[in-house]
Length: 196
Image (tube, rainbow, N blue to C red; front, side):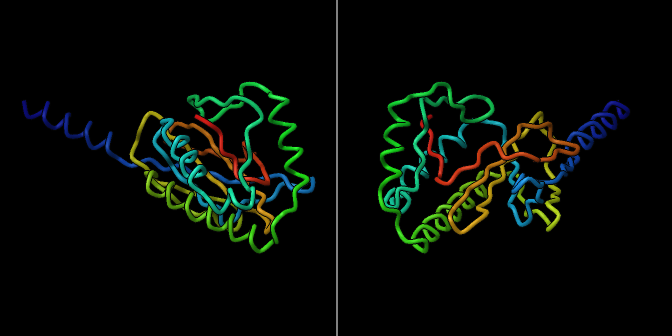
């Protein structure tokens, strides 16, 4: 009986031992590969709710709406296991976006403030949802410690210039080992707000 109890305790402690996830964040720029330095990386539970939360965050952002900083999806969007996916192309929406592009842009400092406020709100949302978070080093390296799970989602985002170019990295992974985020899944000049 004691042997069974000891074995059970060993098994429980092995299961609860934290896992380490490490890797680098990189992105292509001007034909070279740059490290994503000072990029926050979040480990989230593998579930779809985060996309709905981000959509709600976008929809309630009156400052971004006022400066026309929300990107309308070119077609229907659905929530999948890996996040938001474009599933079709709509010429109607594309034409409306081209017409809107001709409108006068707000001054750069207003745009900067709108994107900075959005970044702060998105960071706050992701930190509340994250099971672990870290900021990359100047070489783009990161290391997270998480409790072992079947899988988690890595989410990272960064504004790379004052004009508001936003890059998002996402990957669903096993909660252990090395996982590099080498290519952003989206790169945009407006905040992407897809419909779940």
